[in-house]
Every structure is written in structure tokens, then in C-alpha cells.
Image 1 (cartoon, rainbow, N blue to C red):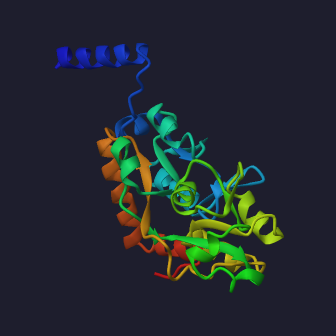
Image 2: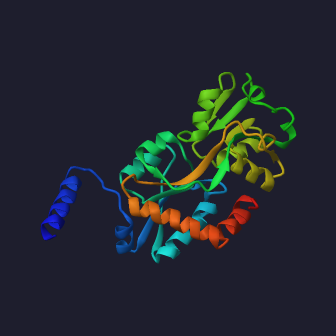
Image 3: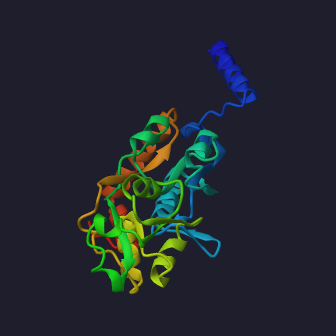
Length: 258
């Protein structure tokens, strides 16, 4: 046993010296006393920075995870363009920021079970809700679509928009404001986010939220070799569902009734 442990330690040291970062598994998280959660802080209602304090559905779930594990929660800033890179570099243990479960991400990482189903849909000014009734209406010359680079929203726009103008915004949070003010006409986003903004800002509408262009799920992102952590995250999610905690958070943050 001593020889095996010695070999394991030696391998870890060699990997570290070579610049290869190994993911922390559950035992290491518990031993450290800290759960590191990567979050973008720019995606309402899942994760957003409110005057220096992170809020949202996924932040509340992260707090529940830390409480269940008996550790301290540490929120690690990341961005959509660097989301996978930061995970591979070991900067965080779990990515929690309204992250879409995609096969391309699954190839390099591992997702938890899905927790919200949604689809891509337009967020528009309430005064223009009857103007944009289809993707063809949106993909028209003269229409301006706001996009935050690096995520699945941009991927959908690049694949499906050929005629409308694509306007890049550094922060995802800035786009709904731009739609409301008329700086851009449309934001293509997840139906959950679109419904949230339409429910909290009378200037905005989500006219096609009931018939989204796509169907997907959100999940929590982890390293592919953090097996015990992956199992434990799914276990904790099941516990939250059984106790009604997940339903309460969805009602509070997502305006969803289970």
C-alpha cells in the first residue's frame, strides 16, 4: 500500500511540474474545507453580480451544496469564452452559471443531471412583440441582434442568422437593457432568461417562449475524472428535489411552478 501511495504522489508531482492540472475530487474538496464554484455572474436569473454580490438560482443551489457538504463556498469568476479552459486548469470544481448541456462540452467534461429544460427564443421590446413572430422575421436586413461571445446564444445566432446585423456585447447583462432602450432589436437567449426579463421589465416581451427554436437542458459542469464529486452532485440535487428545496428555488428565481 505504501508503494502504491508513493507512486500516486510521485505521479501527481510529475503532472504538476509538467503543468498538467488534475481535477479535485470529493475527498480533496472536503479536506480543503472549500467548494470552488465557477460562475460568470452575467446571466440572470441563474448567476448575476449585483453590486459586488452574486445572486441567482445557481448561486442559491451552490450555497445549498456547500451546506450539505459542510464546507465553505468560494465563487470563482469565469467567462463564457474561458469556461472550459478554466475548468481544465483546475480553477474551479463545479461550473454553475446556467450552462447548457452540449455534446461538445461533454466530450471534454462531465455534466450533472439536467435541472431545467428550455429552448432558444427571442427577447424583444414589448412594443415590437408582434413584429417578430418567427426566425425569418428576425433574420432580416436592418434587424440588430445583441450577442455575448462564447456561449450557446452566439453559437445559435452564427448558425442561423444570415441577414440581420450581429452586435457584440462584452456582458450578457447589458443586452436586455440594450433591447429595452432600442439600441438593438432582439436578443436570442434561453427561454428561462427571456421569460424572467419579460416578467420583471414591462418594456420587454418573450413572444415565442412557448414555442422555442430548440430544446435543451441546463446542467452543472465538472471535470471528467472527478467521479465521486459527479455522483455526489447528482445525489445532492436529488435530495433537494425530494425535500422540495429545488421547487422553492425555481419558484423564487425562475418564476416556475413544478
